[in-house]
Length: 324
Image (cartoon, rainbow, N blue to C red; front, side, top):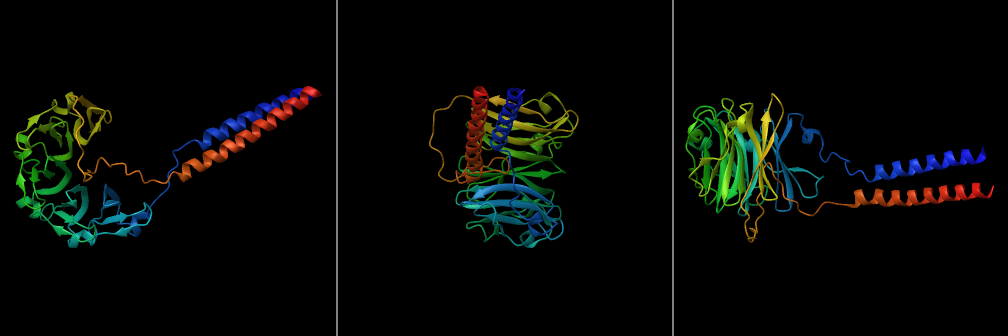
């Protein structure tokens, strides 16, 4: 009887050790890095995130005093990097953030006079670099920003004539790079832009026939790269585009059966030198190699010590029963 009690104790100790080890190696521990709303409850959403000059930037949705941009050099200490709404409360949302050349860009939602694009060379001093709405107030939103080749591209929301894609070689001189709505006014917005292989890809919002993905090899000549809605008109938006392992991935909005992720394989390309300036979009953030790994490794080390001690205790108890 004594041996059976000790054996049961031994099993319990082992189960506790295994559970302790499994819990300690779980790396899904999240911690909040800002104060709620960055101190203002009207900042109801973080609409965009991107890195620039060794800092992380967050663009907010604020329909009260205007969109805000906040930055942190360490991931936890935040400070506001712009004036509310860039001086205009109608700039209600910082829809997109991206780097081009040596400057950082923010695209806004402005239902009054049209979307605005603001640029900063240092993260705090901002200037507008486009005309309101690119000359059309119906271009109310810049939903995506991306670099392709030596030019910078902006995709708009336009509920009147369809989405427009604008490009600039220098950050200030803009020209339209597509036909309105890619020839279909139901393509209301370009919510994603990404470079894949030697082409630029644009994902649209089309609630009529389904989302469309368009590509261009030269920045001006476009062709549709998918079937409407990927064969399902309920796939209304391509919210995100990203490259991974020689594939281009497209993430959709589908309120009927749920989101879908589609991919297309690219041609194998030889390695080419990467640009020295990091280029980011709202949907893809580069790894900077700066995160602190202390928090994740310390519990693991402690757990191993505890596990070793419990195992030695269990062995000692078992050997003791053997001698009884």
